[in-house]
Length: 105
Image 1 (cartoon, rainbow, N blue to C red):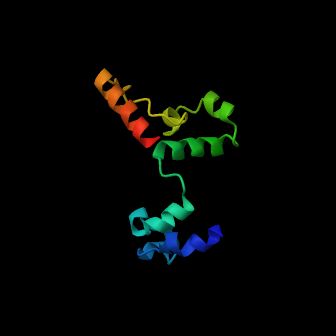
Image 2 (cartoon, rainbow, N blue to C red):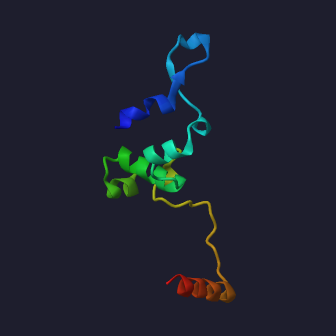
């Protein structure tokens, strides 16, 4: 099934130097329903986490222990953005969130 997507993701290179080789299309040129069908994870941090798990043969403990800090994914390997400041919620915001949860339930 995954090979069915080949035509959606690849194209013949427009550069003569590439000699007619297949290259990856720009993701913006692939219809969103095809992208969503092939890549169900849309959250970039979760996608990075999945890549780290793939690199560590599916072992979450190995992802945690990773020493490859030269890897661009290393800071994001736990599925969180360490550069984002923790959000402080006021009492008013907390009450609004609780009210929204009650309405949803």
